Image 1 (cartoon, rainbow over the protein chains, first blue to last red):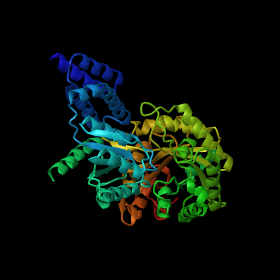
Image 2 (cartoon, rainbow over the protein chains, first blue to last red; image 1 turned 90 degrees about the vertical axis):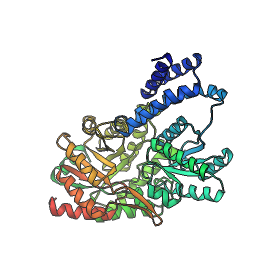
Image 3 (cartoon, rainbow over the protein chains, first blue to last red; image 1 turned 120 degrees about the horizontal axis):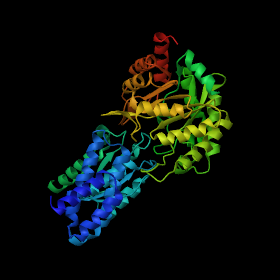
Image 4 (cartoon, rainbow over the protein chains, first blue to last red; image 1 turned 180 degrees about the vertical axis):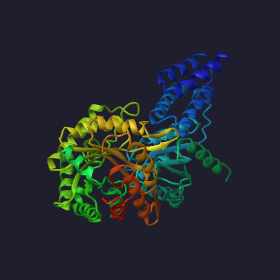
Length: 218
Length: 296
């Protein structure tokens, strides 16, 4: 293996093992060695977070492992971002506004989806938990977002996704809506007129790519 | 009720708990996104009506409308500093509905604050929040404390420690799902060792609630019953909620749920009831089916 391959593999392992200190150290090392930030992300961090997502899917990883992997990725991304901007490599797939709907303080799933989307090349604005419908819409307008992602973890807060769907439709914005959360289903997404639905963070990336792709071709 | 009394009750019969409360309140008009605890102050009569419906359907125990009644969660719901007021009101409502008949379980749910690595909360912080709530519940006269829907063993243990200090009987239930390698909480706590740990920490009855349907919970109870040396509880959901133009509906029919609860009782659970999406109708059918087959 070349030095770079060793470095990429170490980055991948740091993310997979949820070691944010190592991920940060390796990211700095990559920059010192003149490795393009985009390459460090695509060949080190992204394979790491994907593998973590895969292990979650397969029942090998639980929430703590998955979240620490995301945190390690975030630590490395923080260091690589300025270089990425300098490289002019931010050919973002699209801009995403993400949050948990109003009245719902569940943060984890939404943060995970945001992290996976940003790891996959989306520009992500994470609005946090308990986000009012108006704020989703205002941020989508400000950023000219391609996608709005709204999570609801309670049957009591799911109807806010419907309100958001209606508000986005009425706003005339081009942003499409993707919904998710434990009680949310494909049929609910269809019923409220959301264009996208995903039941996990990995699937969310695929769906987001599709949604943005559809916009480009149609 | 002292711990020994709960043991005595569950030795001779299957104790029927109640079913979903939050989901029933939504059907009764609770606004989306609003904490159900508000209604203890605003619409006590509607809460009382739900308790009564469960008692009439055959519940021996009703849970107070205080699932989100710990001070950390109340603060997040826009009700900071109102732990005593809200929990006291909730117990009064349940007691009024019960009269001399049913038992009132003071309901305690998660704080919503995450322990490391997911969040910055400390076990101490959580324990203090639970202590504040259970002391109010005990002062207001609940018969037992019922801790529910925990997904982090450390948080469940903090709640048990707080609840034990009241001297009341303590029921503690966590929410498990089947993964490829077995049954775990979302945090990775495995079913049997976790329930055993809750018993060792002093819970008088332990079990599973929420997340899964009755047919999915049956094998969990079968797995746990021979290995957990305490009364076992089961409160499954009514299937995954679907939202239709008419509102949120749950897929499991009350009849199938009732038959599953009978099998769950036969597998060794001695406290059974329902969680999200179950209604008095689910409990009524389950009670009837239990009487017929288990004879108790």
